Length: 241
Image (tube, rainbow, N blue to C red; front, side, top):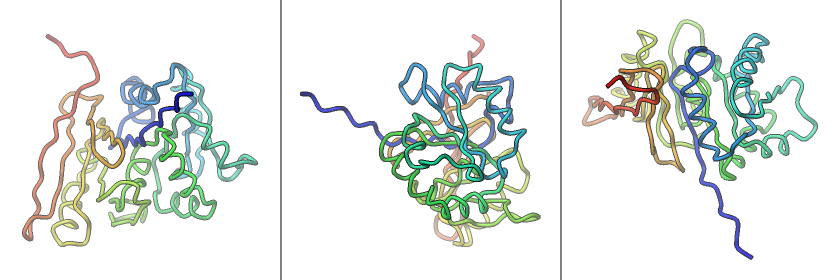
């Protein structure tokens, strides 16, 4: 009897975009679902970072209800009886944005961080936007504390640091570079709004975008300074010829 082929771990970290920021542009969400390899994948939205915002959850169902998938959501305020079984039964886990510090605290209390690591190893596609992007890295640049951007230790499934909204919020780029230049943050990768970083295992395999002109960047500490290298993504829409 032939052995079942194991799926490779995948994470799709979005700098911004998706259903909550681009309700009329489903390109990133469609790409996310396609990586499951399933015709009609089960996809679970995790809105922990927003405090399980009802508005956010409704937007998710409105958007993904139009796509070829089986949508659901996970609330840690009303968790399923078998949390581990529920998560591991999914084809994809889509994590929403907002407060990453609160998200990580709740996940660790419920041991969801450990379950998600198992899901990742099992081949469940993980990903999300903003908080749902930086949470997978060793470190992320977060605005979880009102009024300032800080370095936040995260789950460490992916090496280095991450900065979302690189072009969408004016302070993101200079603060990310400052922390890295000062040695207070690991080198990493940043993404403009509308850009997704697709990791297979721990390697950045593809960079895609839902917006023409949006980019990703490798940002590294080199000899006491910062070196930023632009990574041009593959645009997922139709280009005018």
